[in-house]
Length: 537
Picture 1 (cartoon, rainbow, N blue to C red):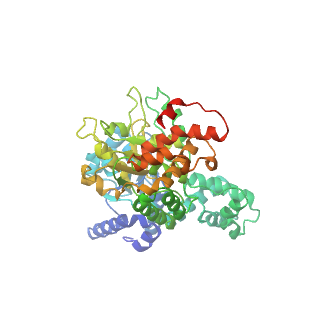
Picture 2 (cartoon, rainbow, N blue to C red; picture 1 turned 90 degrees about the vertical axis):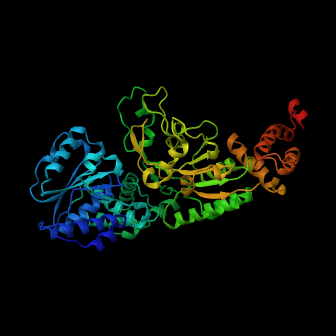
Picture 3 (cartoon, rainbow, N blue to C red; picture 1 turned 90 degrees about the horizontal axis):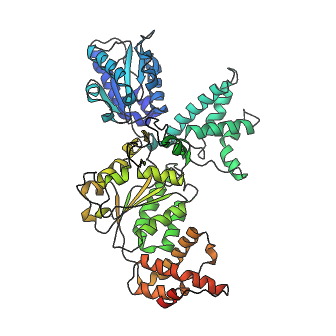
């Protein structure tokens, strides 16, 4: 058999369309050259890690063309298991080839140069094309694996099928009951409320198999997530694992133990809120951000339609004069959505090194800024706010901040970002980026092409009530106060006067916080002595 049903494979695995086209053309070319049976040239598949996507695709391809399949991980390299000849023709998958030891790569290179045996068709899998040594990459054909998250329904089916099969194996289900259990689990995992992380799917599957007595009732499994939430069991929150394993080499500082939480499922926040509700609250507090709010609401609605139950928006650049509340806007969005927040000031001498962190050889090893934001907030989708990006230093020996940012703004590289401190790849795809600048012309064209640019004007003179209410909500959250008991706009006459005189929102917030103890103290009938503040009145 020389060919396969390319349309069927592309339909079942829509993120492999380019890969399918390459394999079809390669197989046809080799058949015309006289190669017997289905075949393709040694292949490098990039853009994916060791996960279900490529295993499922090549497993389906092997079934379609009547071949076997073997999978070799980096741990198999020194055992030389991959050098043993197979009993019949098969597809051999070499996972994470960039992590294979030098000795194994040299042996692979020698086999490629001498002519790879036709009984094992090799597929080398890597996160990025340039991660593979050039001398080996030059001997391979190359094709990308697309972004599975652009096809949520198909990806959910694929991950669900893998999770169901794994649970059946784990529970040692008998052959007679296996179809019954698999059908129940597939119905459960197809539910819109089900998480897409395999670890979370496993936990949910075990819970459902325990709670539901009649495993023949497929509808009971299909509605299990929604019923459990309605009964107070809590909705299953979307989550993901951002680091599969932290490297242990040179770990004299205990990095593996400190950052171990990154290797466990972390929640993806913001999915409990309707995009319209988020936009309405922001508009009520900061209507002069209406263009940016409209952009955010549009992005969040697209994510909602794509069944992504978490806060995720395209990188956003806010351009406007100082003091209009750009950083406060980002922080309020994080507070409303209930996700983490990290502030980074790019002004002055900030360099790429400030963003990418320090390796373990450094006196103070630290992960990259987005990884720190995830670690501190314990959310996989925090908001990274980078202020004064137009004032970031240029031509620094330590690297430009703009260059460092480009690697995380691209979804493909963000999914597999290598962190020197963690000595591992980290998935930064879910992190939300909001940048601020006073002048967009000081930002290079490449950076501007990666972000949505929205202009922010100064708030109008009659906007003080919205500003005052927003500031008090923020202060209540920061200090753990009752938001309903905070003073209203009419109690901050001095702040209102200063605002109308042209003071920035940053200054207005400082004045209001200075006045707050006296206002709260007077309500309680307490004598609050603050002569310095009264003098300022």
